[in-house]
Length: 398
Ligand code: GLU
Image (tube, rainbow, N blue to C red; front, side, top):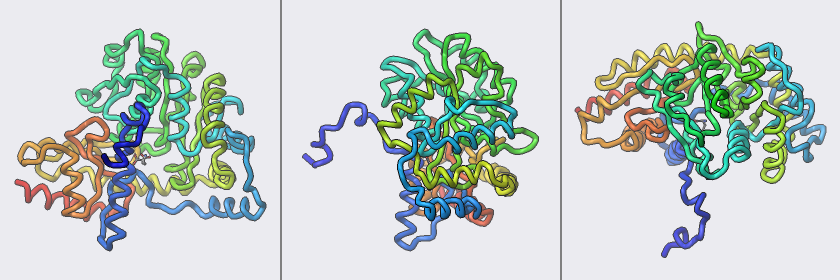
């Protein structure tokens, strides 16, 4: 028996799959290390550098020996900076006890789910969904209930939410703009969905990691703008990873009901303790400093989207809806699969990488095997090459 099989891993972990999105990143890195030129449209990671003023704040923190433990939930100044940013951008008000900083948005989501979900509790997740949601729900012993949004162009409707509510449902996860579809929930619909969930006694986690990345005419919306009776049941998760091109720094946050945040801090105090102290200082500079770099990034993403979507729709057997936010295209490739001997998006992902050196993520990872996720957080030039190679791949199949 191999050593791996002999390891008596826990039941909960044996059910867990490694992150498919991070696996694509690793696969692309491995090929690059072997000297192969890869067009990386897999990673959901800005290709822009972290702005200079943020890097300078990190240097200053090191110079000042700001290298010790901080409170597990982050330093007071950072919590204030998070609160101020949201107050300025959305006119909303939170108290420091309702805020915590985390090592990336993912840790906030992990803390949120494990503090709320008991074995047997149901978590409603609109599908397609970000890979990590169901994994954490399963880790907590909960049951993911997927609500298929494809029939309504990847927009969750109040009717379909209602149809999936049971007495065991405890949490609804909303993710707008959505990773992987780019679909963005209009504010009025968002309110109706939360209202329905709250009416049935649910809590809501609003994953807003892509909140700032919405394209005109849509405007960013934060769940903190909901009326107080709804807001009191909603936890907001955010990250600096995408907004300020800081993926490797690991800084996320959660805002929400104080009792929920208090429990989340407890969990964090026994896992990672505080987010990196130097990153916290850099995050303050990001949140309080000039916001222009974000505007520049958004304009660039919009230009790329405007190239990518028509180019994808031009490939026979591929059809792609127009994303209103985030930086992902989620083309339907069933027309390609039907005309070929390929069985799944996972096979398409593998062959595109191995034979055409293009990294994309299989839709299967997001609960939708007939699709691919293509990240346009890469240069226009890379996107052009990537689409060209995808077209060549498809044409060779037919
Ligand atoms: N969230 C990004 C993605 O979906 C980064 C990888 C991850 O954390 O899943 O690609």
